[in-house]
Image 1 (tube, one colour):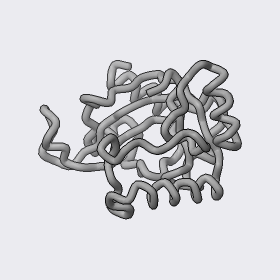
Image 2 (cartoon, rainbow, N blue to C red):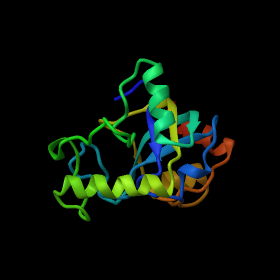
Image 3 (cartoon, one colour):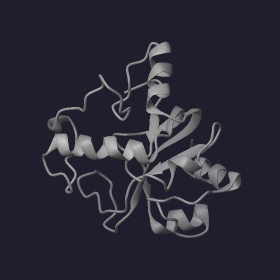
Length: 171
């Protein structure tokens, strides 16, 4: 949605975003699933490599991030929880089980999470594929990273592991 994709702590308040600094690189991998609806998916559960992004700017508040995005002539990202930036209609997102179809409850909960951790990261894209992201099986992950890594609260990877990942996927 933006020239500068953003990361916030709205989903995992203190587990990922607070650790990141300007210049850090984040690798986005889906949760492990079968993804049978995607052509060429293996039958086994697997991940999909979605994006590699680099932290350009770190803001300690959503308000500071909003001011920066507007200075750049960019629309505010939907995860920027500031007054005047309402949530998308439910038909434009995926209702989370916890909130079902109560968009206002969902928005209220996310507003509360901003109070717990208001760090907001503006990033640049090194690589992204949102429509047909490549497969990452357990074997591939082990070949690249040496072992199975958690993806919800990701551990740090080495520069050499990042190079192997990029090389494997031709990035």
